[in-house]
Length: 202
Image (tube, rainbow, N blue to C red; front, side):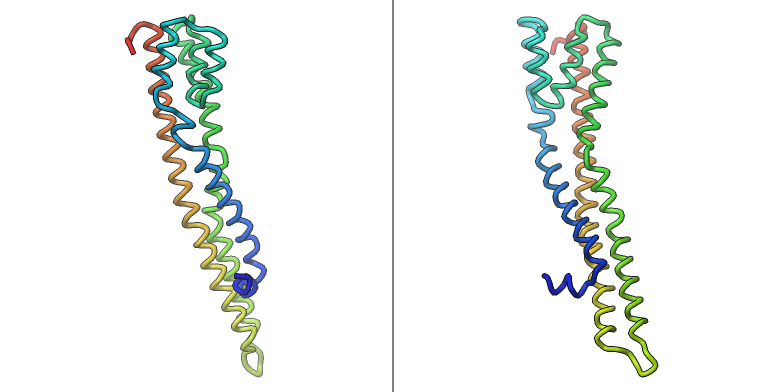
């Protein structure tokens, strides 16, 4: 591995740095963006059951808000349970925007790495091409410099693509996952509003 890095020249170092960041972000988002952690099933039913049994209390709101991101959205509605439907929905939407911002954390960085990794590889290719042309002398080509230039050009191009392809796949996967969580939370929040205002039984 060290021989490959040595053959690829100095342009490989920014790519290696980008790859480490990409792997760290993919692992972090994979752990964080799990349904059981973001929008656990059965939470709304439990909240509605508690609401009907004992009403809203500060302790209940605090417990629900600490449960999960979905809990934060539902807790915003519970804080305004005595307000009008519009005020309750507005509070839920505000909490939802905060939750979505947290869910999308680091995705911009991952998408940026997916976009620039091929360009960084292309830059390495250009550096390699410069070395190839620099190997040409009046007496003929310098074989060692020519070989090194070719290595720099090819390794950086390949490494840039190796980083970009999985980064793009995971970026699109996480974006789709966040969108599905947002839709699910919206639907559950609407159900809570309808239950509170007597338009739905549960």
